[in-house]
Amino acid sequence: MHQDHSPMAGSTSPNAPKSGLKRLFRSKDGAAAIEFALLAIPYFLIVFAIIETFVAYTAEQLVANAVDTMGRKLRTGNITYSTTNTTAPTYMDETKFRRAFCGEISILIKCSEAEITAVTKTNKLFLDAKPYTNFSDMPTTIPVGSDGDLNTTGLTFAPGGAGTKNMLRAYYRWDIMTDLLRPYISNIRPTTGSNYFLIVETSAFKNEDYP
Image (cartoon, rainbow, N blue to C red; front, side, top):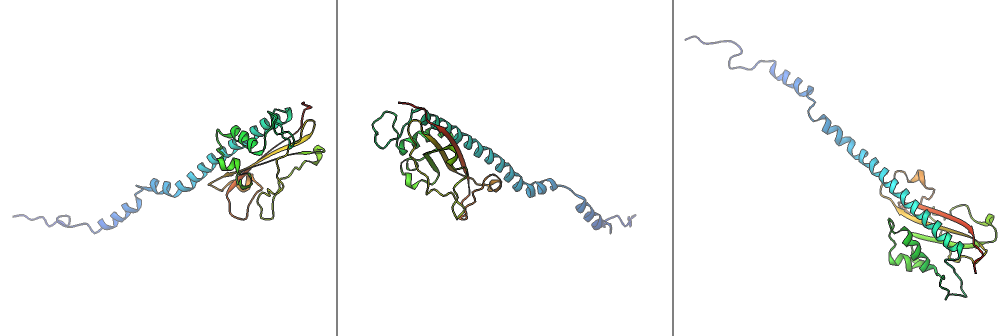
């Protein structure tokens, strides 16, 4: 009986292990998955930051529109404030004014009842409305305390009557999650570690000579 004594019969080529390693190192299967895993976190972080910035600027525009609307009502006498005539149909104290202001921004920003009524305990929405002798006397900077946060001690609600020059300013602390762009879009950097974008909108006007 003839037997095949060829080295290929029933044995493995001595080059087989070496060629197998070559094939392993040359294989690119799964490379895309590995690259995606490495880049996914920073990629989605940037995308989320862009979306969050867009929403923050949308909220800023809402606050700006609310300041313009409420300022116009103060200017025309549709909203009045007086410590001596609280029975006028146009009279609004600070709580009523805050409620009306929150109604203007409610499409995106929700004010809790505590935020509206507990004026001294508010931590998001701050309103400042008061008269000045001249427009040049009105502040042009944001009041910042020694801790780098908004200084609210000088904020009051006491708009003037007919013919007075007034400034209405609103501050809103918009909470953010991806704190990547805040240092470039805000000069408020609290040392307490709070992550928020401070929305600031101002309206300066002279009240009409309404009755």
